[in-house]
Length: 314
Image 1 (cartoon, one colour):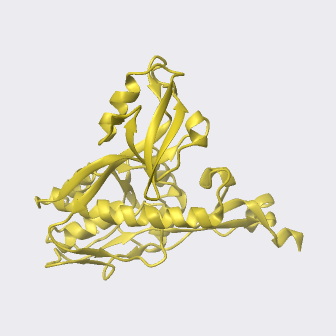
Image 2 (cartoon, rainbow, N blue to C red):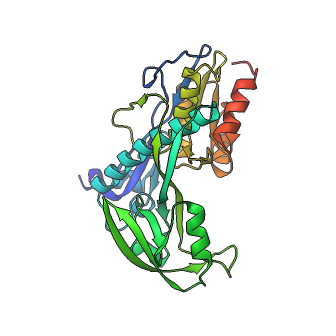
């Protein structure tokens, strides 16, 4: 019975890609072309000891990963689930902004600070800053954009202490952290966090996205493609197009986790193309494609251009 007890590690298991039809509702939509845009997801659970020790007992395509790879020290499974839900809500909002802007609509996005997407585990800031924090000042100097933050941090030296004012759960907190050397440019100070723009957003019309209990930020790219399709852009040309990738407010397609499982999930849905973040994600998708045609992209704008102008056969 010990072998069936959950371990501390997690296991990532492929889930079949699913179409977004009916899950994305755009006011005044007029779908462009035949075909469907698919999103890909995966199952995440605690691995059993038997699965951890004997790979052949794992579900097909599954990978065991250490707990710290998915869950920061001191956080619970419930914390991870709550953050996943927050990430999904943000991905829906960003996808709407990015897609509508790319299609020429007027979207109001008032900058409100630098949103923390992640914190490196090996920097002093890891003990103070959480994903989801919004940095609004550095040593009392207001920060409205990620560029403001980088400029202020750049005025310091590696090892200097800085006071970051953050918004967390509706409250303002002053957090003292120490900068570190940028591994790529040792003379440049960094805090060791990844950030994006926090903004108050006003769309010109309603966009409603509902994936139920699915969480995380990686469906941003397929959301944006489906919004574009609902507004008359033929991104499918009668094909089944699966996609994965987190979106930045500027349209950048950011890397995601679980690319092996998501590629397998796309294959199981028998889609024609799989659009993925360029770089390591694209390399991982190609490695597991088994004939599935992979399209690497760096931005939503590039993905939209490729898919609307492509005449490749399904």
